Image 1 (cartoon, rainbow, N blue to C red):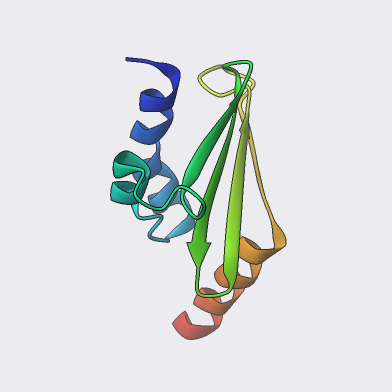
Image 2 (tube, rainbow, N blue to C red):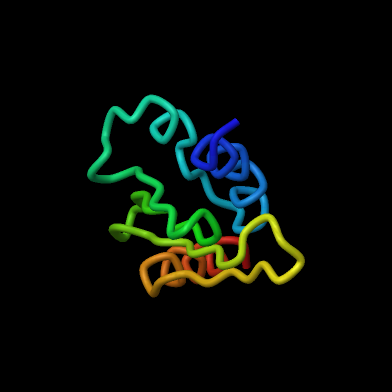
Length: 89
């Protein structure tokens, strides 16, 4: 399994962590590459780009598949998460 395939296999875990739908199928099919794509940096960092109701979201996993893995995300995803939290209250 190559690095991108491994990164795609992490999507369900990220969807559960953030309580969002990242449209894994669009990453697999590559049918909308401008909106749903994965960038690999030296096979150690992964950047997921995908669409939400508020625009283009981004999740960055640094040192993926290691004990030093860290996660960050952009403001668009944070707005989406804040809206979900407001709906659930």
